[in-house]
Length: 94
Image 1 (cartoon, helix red, strand yellow):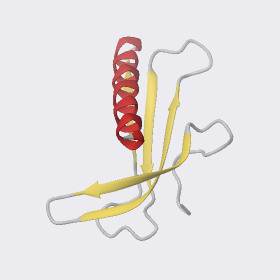
Image 2 (cartoon, helix red, strand yellow):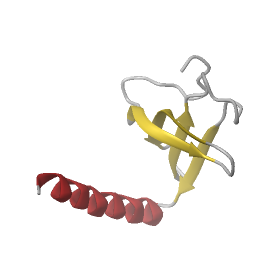
Image 3 (cartoon, rainbow, N blue to C red):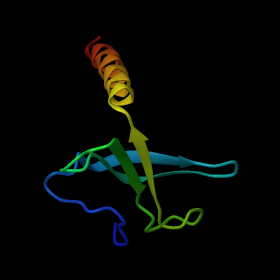
Image 4 (cartoon, rainbow, N blue to C red):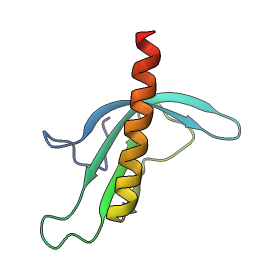
């Protein structure tokens, strides 16, 4: 991803994930960077940041999405991720 807006380093949560961009008249698979972070000092929220590779993208300019979550929202998201991860693992083992 040559024009990254996010810093990607050894602490980045997922420096490569498969992603799909979907619009009314397009759907494209691409790579993505996903990071979960907060401020080192006096954190006020948990940030969930997502940036899709725009090297070949024709529909969207370079951009990054950021959700600012409360601790309760982050825990709700974590619980759902665990639940669906278990479901996918179980389906793969059958």
